Length: 96
Image 1 (tube, rainbow, N blue to C red):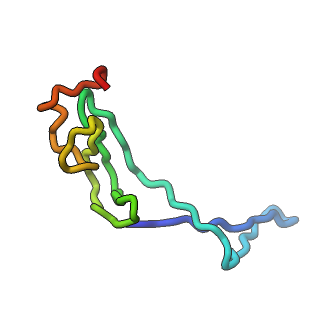
Image 2 (cartoon, one colour; image 1 turned 90 degrees about the vertical axis):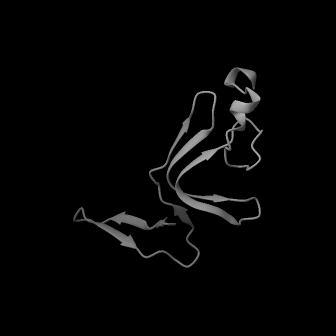
């Protein structure tokens, strides 16, 4: 699921073509842009739509998924995921 782009050095030649030099061993890789959309649901969680890895602070992958709902109210018993506690607690955006 993970992908990356490798930065290369490019230069123009006299004839107008480009030349890309192979990266050296110490070239930094940057994550590729993915198609992930995060939507704030009214008085509810964050809806994450797209291929993502949800990672714990220690680096452990909690879940790899294409759809997730993340707690925004702080009441979930299954953080970082939403378990619907916002409804039980009467949480709204204006109450936060």
